[in-house]
Image (cartoon, rainbow, N blue to C red; front, side):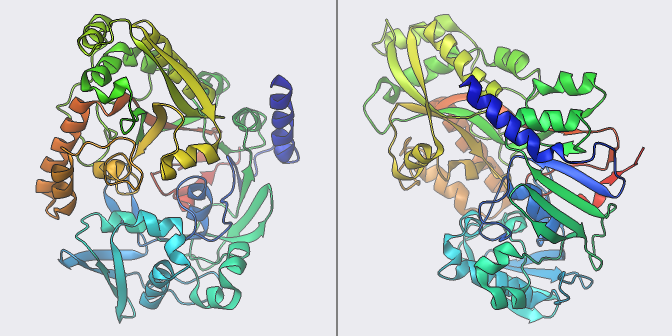
Length: 501
């Protein structure tokens, strides 16, 4: 295992070893975990790592701040004429990198791709809820309808990145993935296995402050850290709390931002186990010293999760307290449920998690062992994990997972999977379904907020899992980098500069 780590580290470091270690004021060099599996096709990809690549090449109608508020991008403004119909007004100064005009037809073209046979299988199509159809009103105005009320459509449309229509028709989806053309601040020069070279797009409405952007695929976290410390990278992403002192002591900066996820040790209650008893589930929450985990293993960053959504989400209920650390109460609840001597269970977690996340699960297991609950943490590969999520093929009684709310930061999004409405649910509480459906169908945001907070309270009291911590994003920067920021689904690359000293 140690030899394997050495080899991977060496390979990852070689990928950036040829980069000049002197700051180049015209080139931003960035180390990321990897490149999108579908290349430069922004409709087929979603989330990380496309966050780091597609934000440079493409634009969307909106982007979403870390407080969940949608902001204009190529849409100047928007409004809804009824609960299922939205009208977006577009900027007039946007063109694609190849000179094609960006207009309302471009928006309709992208949505029609997602509604087509091929596009329905794209990740973007599954993430934009209730997307119906689109039609051109005039060159700068487009109407978008939904199949059900969705007050967060402007936020979710931040995932819809626009492709040059004629280029897409000419080369097809596979050709577009190799030669993407968008309207973002940078245009493609070369897409390689370990390096994506981008240059400033001369007609970009978001004109960048640097002439070039080099994105390096550096899967190993340690290699990204060394690339930054050696001066071969200006920005490196995806660090852990353990890396903060190392970088800061060396004179570097760590950009810390809230994420749209919370980490939960989710309980599988659709098969026979002690976890079917609410008292057992509550006992396990009381048994884990979550604040100590945040303070020691997360360096004090982040916060203890109190519910199935992070604190930045719409519908988060601030009145819900965390389960206090109380091992004696945990033992009493276990005894009341008929398990005075505890029990044993299997919990599955992803293999190759960052070390600090694995350590958190191990600390959780150690805390549970003190009240007699022995958890075998079983590391599983991504394909096996996916079989559990999408086919219900779990080998244990619980698993580590993130409750995600991006891009809308709507707390209810975390329950699209973690409830009875999922195709193969692992936790199904029928008593929650009426309230959940009422909240989902409500267009009025004030009413939806109240209903969602009731859903969060119900989930907390039922203890659908061990609520651990809200995720925090750690990205490392040299002192030369200015204007760097990252949102849940967008990096404003046009705002980043290098002082060159």
